[in-house]
Image (cartoon, rainbow, N blue to C red; front, side, top):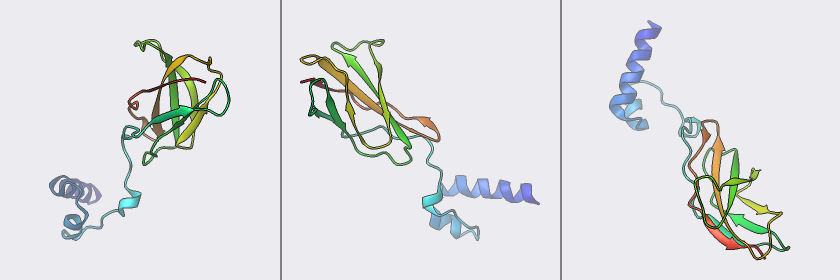
Length: 131
């Protein structure tokens, strides 16, 4: 009986495309949207860089990604190549200060969210010259 109910629930979810009100109309319960699994993370957006307060630093900011537990940053010297990216840090906030950079050098930075489903796509890279 449990397997028949499970199959019915899968069919309802497929037919209703997960629309809560339609699921409820079948007599089944529906998960609260806040408990729905996140799945694949979205791309980080509104990524920006400003000069840091100290020489050899850059400050980065971006919009939080729903479901992200942390963020990974990478840096590259100019010009970017497929193999030029190197680790620049892991943070839990939607901002980071990257240190240890060479003043007067142009850097490219990118960030990706990390959650239960793994790493999301990289942000569009942004560039700035370290002071």
